[in-house]
Length: 182
Image 1 (cartoon, rainbow, N blue to C red):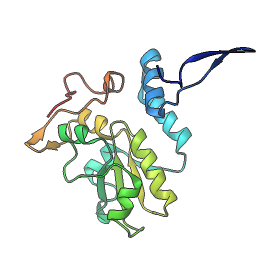
Image 2: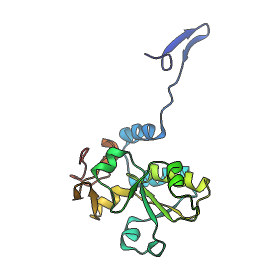
Image 3: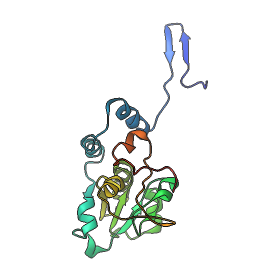
Image 4: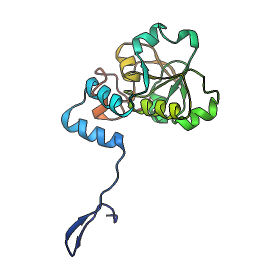
């Protein structure tokens, strides 16, 4: 076992060195124990990223919002998730810094998405901190998009599968939608 995470005995009793875990890991652990819901996801996003604007999957799909602005659609999930499926015309760029280097014009309209909206809200927040003025998080992201039977693609063409991220988060997908490989 590494030094961090080991219980050490000192003069005044045991000392515990804590291991640092990512927020995604901790949320997955918590929700794995107590269940996950869209309400809980929304509350967590609203609490951590209160200024981030969102657009619903329904409005975005119907072209009711942002269509006249021709936003850049960016998938911020990991490469293996993107390979299983993504929204048509989405670019795969995982961080705010990478997006900023590809699109230096800070007035560029950008819509970011991930599995449920948490990672993309974090990237939208990063972009706002960098001075971007037209950044939107796709609310409930690709999971709700897939659950609404909106089009998905991968390197082979159309698909109806989505990478579930893990079993906990995958519970928000309709049955039969999850796949870890294209």
